[in-house]
Amino acid sequence: MKNFRLFLGLRLSESVTEFLKCKIANLAEAGLSFRKWTHPADLHVTLHFIGDTSSSQMHALGALAAEVAADTAPFALALTEAGTFGPPSTPRVLWCGLAEPAAPSGGALAALHAALGARLSASGFATEARPFRAHVTLARGGAAGFNPAAMATAWHKVCAMPPSSASQPEAPPLAHPSWIVDSCTLFLTHLGQRPSYEPISNYPLGLK
Picture 1: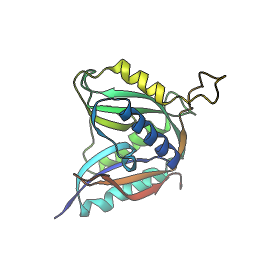
Picture 2: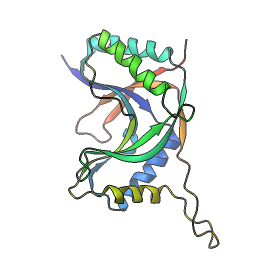
Picture 3: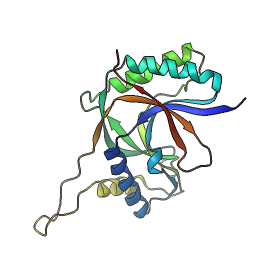
Picture 4: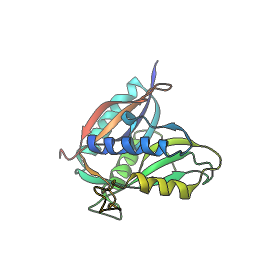
């Protein structure tokens, strides 16, 4: 029986995807040494990694995701700063952080993650034990000698608008874009392909 490598996550809006697509290109050109930059079509927010799932389990997975999504009101998310996971000198992942403009200390996103996790566990699906840290992965596989300070400098540089005139030598930084999360998505992973993630089902938020 064929298994499917699945995860639940959030899709980005077109404008946010385009913003990050430009930033990824600029960061790569700035010389940040990562082995693999995320394909723009693969940019997303992971909620829960499910892993190998049989076709017989997919109906139950979809049903619980749809029910949790229906109980969750749509909410806004905004991009924040860049950061890394792993050792500072050889980071595993370069990411962009997220915040909720209406709830700076967090709220709806964490609640959605927790509600999905509870339903997944109750239904026999394994969930990750490590704490949830919402982010969008930009690159993987930092080379030895990576400089976090250089990364921060490069990130702020590419997020700055170019001068509009000679009389304006320094332009204000671009506002990090935001979008309204109005659905949860089930993704299928295609290992060895690029792009790698295929959205196969969307579950609208706030139907109840």
